[in-house]
Length: 146
Image (cartoon, rainbow, N blue to C red):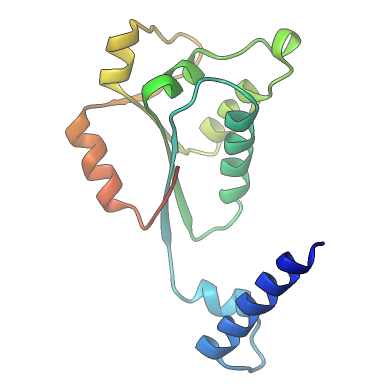
């Protein structure tokens, strides 16, 4: 680990101690007291390694019981919903989308992006959102990861 990363971690821990004080509860337990977090992950890039990693991160975010997760595909991210052939691309995108669907994560796609690209989904089921719906969704979430 680099010296800068260590300094950054130490500053983060110092700030946690300033906010919460030092007591018997762990910082994780104290952070959980803040309650449920609504998290929106926006995918705007076409299928690729970074998108596969973002979807993998989404699966990890579902492990925290206080998180409510939504995934929104916009612009070229709408192509992600078509699926990928792992044997040709070595990307785990389909596996992550299947897992997120099984975990009842809300998977959404911009209706404008779908119409503009003339996409038809057959492999996965997505909730089509208008621009107004997307705006409402973005304001309703506590955390937005782009």
